[in-house]
Length: 400
Image (cartoon, rainbow, N blue to C red; front, top):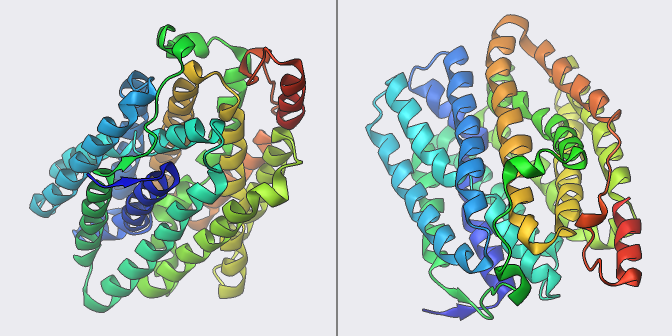
């Protein structure tokens, strides 16, 4: 197999995965709609997907607690995702078949989010890469995927949504077959530690507050993910314009990730979360109020603060954990903040949009207000290099 650098392997794996995700997130609801699925059922299907990702991250991801497992597991997940997308061609408009395909697809897709992040955190701790400049390639590919499928779907039909999504997973699997040099290897003291129990972590109040905080911020995106494209299409925008709007949001995300080290290295995790929570209220308040193009541009630019800034803050929090706890925390973050909370709010959004229309976005805005009242605690056990008082002090300052 061809060898590559850790930065090359992770950034290109993220590029392939987020290309496919750039098809899935904005356009899967439109594909369901093209198959004759009612709006309320579309919300249910999308919610099933998030719920499955949550369970997948609770069951599968924590078992990959040693870094040596990252490569083979990520390769198999990419292969499984490729097969699961292929099966969608056989659904034939049946809700129950689509629900089954959704479950199979999201079982694979769930761990494909936290494990590359955990792998990047491992190499970042070895000073072999910077997380922001690595993660930015996933955001760039999201733009490419959503823009391409928006153009193809509006010009040639909704069936291109599946074709482009499948192409993304094929590319992800092929790129995963290469080998990063050096390979990830657990530190000798870490290999002796037992796999952390998720329920033990959930008994730590500091962890519970962290998860609640990120669940409110990330969960506020549920209506956008599930009915945002339907809302904009009903307002007269074509799939092409919708694709551009989604891409604009990720362009803002790309810029934030690319400049994160320069802009936010001096900011505490608490401050980053506060800024993100305020942006949540502003973004979804505007979305509930108008569908005029200029405000929508502002709404999409705020994605850099509502999603990317909160994600960077969460990764920084996790990055200071001991290696034995890092994957478990990453799994809980993806399972609860980016899985369960979005799954619950997505199912609610489908119902809410059917009954209240755009006013469902006011519920999302209120979640940002709720996040402002949660004060994040930083336990000493999560400070990297606790045996070095100088490094510990620097870490504590960065986190708090």
